[in-house]
Length: 562
Ligand SMILES: [Zn+2]
Image (cartoon, rainbow, N blue to C red; front, top):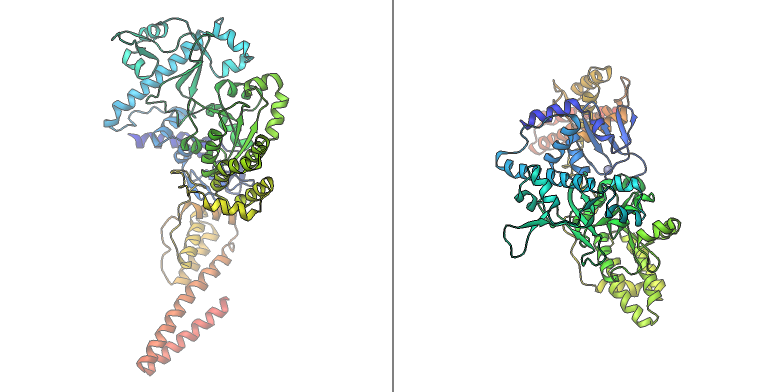
């Protein structure tokens, strides 16, 4: 049963084992603290409790257990997290799928197997092949070729097909994985999709091969690059090439670099720009941006001098800005793609990266450079730059760029603002929000709020003099016999550990108790005043006297607390 698997994993892996590969943690009192991987910060607000097996970020207001952490950081669902952690823990998963999904799940599992096998097979064909010679010619180092598991699809029709069917994979499985094709007009005749190509495995963010790109080795091949078709594993609008190798660097460097092709990614990584990814044969989508945002909120577009027109770049930039990313762009010199430039002159590439400009300023400069006619410049700026400014969610940043645009175009900032207001309104990009969504805390009364804090003290430091004092004071103040048994929310528990530290004294919660008592007594006092009003209205002399005495007593108690 899945539940047993979960329990077994939790037994074998501590929360620290699970989180430490992603977040550098240090001990701070009773919890471990690090920089939150889900939002940008300079001081750690990401807390991990090894005792409770939970995590919580005070910046994003989110938290959970090891499974939810893996789901969020790897972008997988619960089953995916279960699988990853089971592998890590060395726990066998017997049945993780419901019976109706089992067939589909095992089909997908089988597809992963065949893709993985194909990747090994292509890599095995690489030594001394024309593909290896081509990789060398493009100045890819041996280490790079190995690390990215490049391969060779031989110049033959059925080599892969025969090899994999001999291993027991079926024609249907190879077809579904996009590795073979049926011949046009010859039903039942199949051949390898990739032939005479240098093969780049495309992996998802958890390093599983989901597709391939093949670079033609013959000069006269019409398709220079050939991609796998979309399959159950491969959805190109979900995949960023290189993300599995780039995610850590994106997190530590604080930005992702987006280039155009696989070769660019390999050269960038080879030169130390390990935070580089590429699209695989599609335009940038919201899903790509969601994936990127998991690692950083900053995106740098690296543009060839001759890369697809302004419009396409502006569209990508606009989408990214709307998704709440900060976008910069770097322009490469005429006639060079990143792969060329890095392999020929890594220093110049580094300089170009350093000189990258925020996207609005980038376009303003490019346009001003291109359009000598002031009227035409205004029109292009209106078409390209204003939609970018409008897409920026932060009002302060928007204002900054309005002023930059006004300066470049020799306009007043009022004129720019007015043109902005006239732009057709764009909807917010679906599914992409600006900040991690924090669960909205239910509105609690001051009394509930303080009660929660007191319970958290009892829960965190059980059977200490502090807990005993809190218990007896709680009973005295509320005149209740027992303290409620509820377990306070994780956020409150983490907060308590931070406030009270490792070994709090008996009186550590006195200030909290005083605040609690004040709230409770004030509530009782207000009731007593209401009683007094009622007695006065009824003209009941003895009730008035009793109520007055009660009020006076409570007032005295209040002033003693205050
Ligand atoms: Zn956070």
